[in-house]
Length: 297
Ligand SMILES: NC(=O)c1ccc[n+]([C@@H]2O[C@H](COP(=O)([O-])OP(=O)(O)OC[C@H]3O[C@@H](n4cnc5c(N)ncnc54)[C@H](OP(=O)(O)O)[C@@H]3O)[C@@H](O)[C@H]2O)c1
Image (cartoon, rainbow, N blue to C red):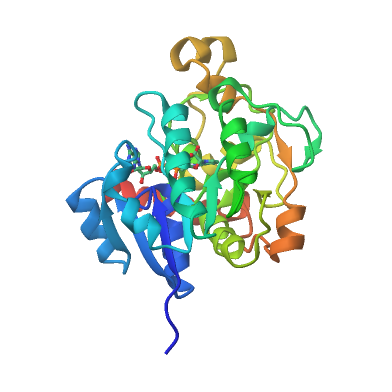
């Protein structure tokens, strides 16, 4: 009998983390998932994920679980309070646990650390130019990538679509959207992204960052039009000018208005990863039906 490899995942009830947890389980791992309350914990247990009750603020609650794992994945994010400071503190706690045993730590960053790519396609070799919202991530990434005595890996997901939709969900509704729609958003389906985490655990290089994005190069206007067609929405609310959006959303408006094109060639080459989903525009009818079904459930 072979012994199970164990992975510990923070944010296991979130959009990315839940699907990453499922992907590791499908690949045969014993999966420990951090959950903040009993109801969510039992939801994880129903999916063969061993729940660990706790919060990022109290690493003592999950230190033993993290210490039992060969692979640690950080995919939690807390938007209340100082998001980036808590993110850094959680990574430091995970690093301490991982370093003693030469384990692997996979940190979830994001393509926003590349800032506006101004019509160019960038990869991991480009100097980072983060937007204000995620600027502290550059140092957090550095801690992970440079950590001695463990395999530190950073994943920079593109904007994630699929299931509950994440930042693409508003496109299927009547909400006005920040910007003018001429900017590009790199995207990745959450299933394809989850597959990249398992590949990183199995063959990712220590000290490497991987952009994970499909090969689509659509503008937000094109993506949103596909979503609205699929949802059967006609005219209606349009776009909110950036200056106006900043007044109501703060720096988040700048994130939504970013014009980004990125390449996942390194993940394709080194991990053998490839987006298997056909892309947001082709899949919009399936995605619209899923969002509608979730709203009606
Ligand atoms: N979604 C995207 O398009 C995207 C793209 C690039 C990068 N990222 C990055 O990926 C990470 C995960 O994003 P996501 O979209 O999956 O977020 P999400 O759906 O909001 O999930 C956040 C997860 O963190 C958990 N959490 C929140 N506060 C916590 C705390 N204090 N202690 C313990 N757990 C806590 C949540 O638990 P509950 O279920 O209890 O709330 C949930 O499991 C973030 O760092 C984000 O910046 C996301």
